[in-house]
Structure formats: C-alpha cells, structure tokens
Length: 285
Image (cartoon, rainbow, N blue to C red; front, side):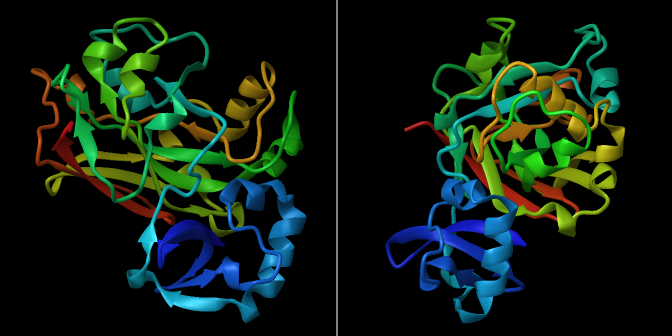
C-alpha cells in the first residue's frame, strides 16, 4: 500500500493511494485519520484497513494536497557517510567513519513533498541530499535478526537538506541539518510488500532538470536491518520515526569548487518503486 497524509476541503487526514485516486480513510468508520495512530495499529491494523478499503470514498489525487506522510514524527534521524560512492567523493575532506554515524534532524524541519525549501538568511551553503527513508511502524528496543522486519512500516523519499557551513559547526551536524523546511519527505509511505528489491533501488536527484545524483541502494555500506539494530541498542524506536539512510555521490558541496543551491532552483528526488518529491528554493521570509 501507499499510505499518505493529505489535505482536502480544509481538513488533513490519511489515505491510501491507488493509481490516480486516494481512498479517504475518514470515510471508513473507526479508521485512524493521523498517520502515527495508523502505524501504531501495527500489521493487524493495516490488514484490517486493507479489508475495509472497498467502502472508502475515492478522491482524485490531483484534487488533494499531499503533505509530509508523518507530520509530527517523534524522531527524525539521519545517517552520514553510508554510501561507498559518497565516501569516495568526500575522501579529500574526511576519513571513513569506523561505525554508523547518526545525527538528529529536529522534527520542526519536516516539510511536504512539494513544498518550498527556504534559503537561510545566515548562509548560502545550501545543499541537497537525496535519500531513502525508513518509516518505523512498531515500538521496540534491542531489535535483532528477523524481528527487524516487523519494525519497518515502509519507505519514503527524503531530501536531507543541509546548510554545510552550519553543519560543520559541531561534530553532531544537527544545526546544519535542522533548519525549518529542510526535511521534505514523501510523497507517501510505501509498505515493504511492494518493494521486494529494497536493496537494489535506483535513487536519482535533479537540480533544474540536470541529473546530479544517480545511485542505487545497492551501494549502501549498511543494510537497513543493521541500521535498526544499531539504533535500537541505544533507545526505543517508535511508530512514525523517520530514519534517513544516507546519500550517494553527487552532492553540491563535494564538487570542486562547491556548487550550492540558489533561490529559484528546483530539486527533484526520485526513488524507484516509491515516487518523487520536488521542492523549489525560496528566500527565507
């Protein structure tokens, strides 16, 4: 299934995308209208939802506004230096990390799949990072082996927008990753059953129609299960948590000289089997 959050008629709720239609879950008695609540129902809740879709009211996808699939995640984390190709392009400025290197993106950066990205007033070192993001679907700690599969609600597209100057202020990178609007995700969550080749998906990023990133999840150093094992060793993962899994080669900051985003630029990120997000850069108001 493709699980979406959308606004229609002044109200925001959840839906299931089917071709060019969206099944409005608000029309199914008792169905959750918030994505976190929907995910908290687990696999049993999703199975019940599937069996009820026949009675749902359908809306034209073109008539609704797609929002970030999870509007208020409890956690939004990003993994740095996780693609072999990206490590190669930044080898002149950093050493390969010995372990998974995670950082926080503050949840106030969450942005819609087609909403504007703001160019900060304090820096012009604005960069893009096309990434596949895991959406957590269960609560768990110390998750190992086959149990990892049950933790994943699905996958979505993410732009880990980065202000490089501020990213380098501290080893945590959090400030440079957390400016408002710098976490576009979407356009929906695709459940794992629709993505059997999750470790072999094409990931591409365009800026103003120019292909900048052309990678594959097969280039990842860590598998998605390893990421969940690492994080859940430390803290409890919860439904709706977003885990951005890193970016392949082609970011603007790694070019020599660097090529950063400008006001008016349009960034499109597409992942095979999921879809695309597209965001215009505008001046911070």
